[in-house]
Length: 138
Image (tube, rainbow, N blue to C red; front, side, top):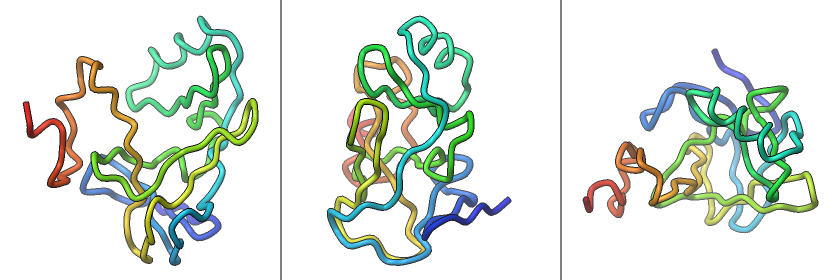
């Protein structure tokens, strides 16, 4: 399955399952795309959604608002983690998140973000392959 959209596409990843790849160049600090999906309100409802997903696609925007990329999301829901990412997320409003290039990204490159919580019990499962991978330091 390949899903193409505004300069990005979903395809098989060497990091994990499917990933989000650049189809064009993205200069450093420029917007790649918006993270889309169902806006969820209410801490308990958000936590239930997170607990029900194998590959978590929920992005917390605030204490009681999140976006679930698994429900009506776009290719950005497939962005994988890296301990040495080439992109980052920013909340641009109370219920909107955008993805920006951290450095220049070339066509064909997998778009990655550092979203691992080092205090999370599964943080050692990182498969990003970066030279500075935190799971390799354990």
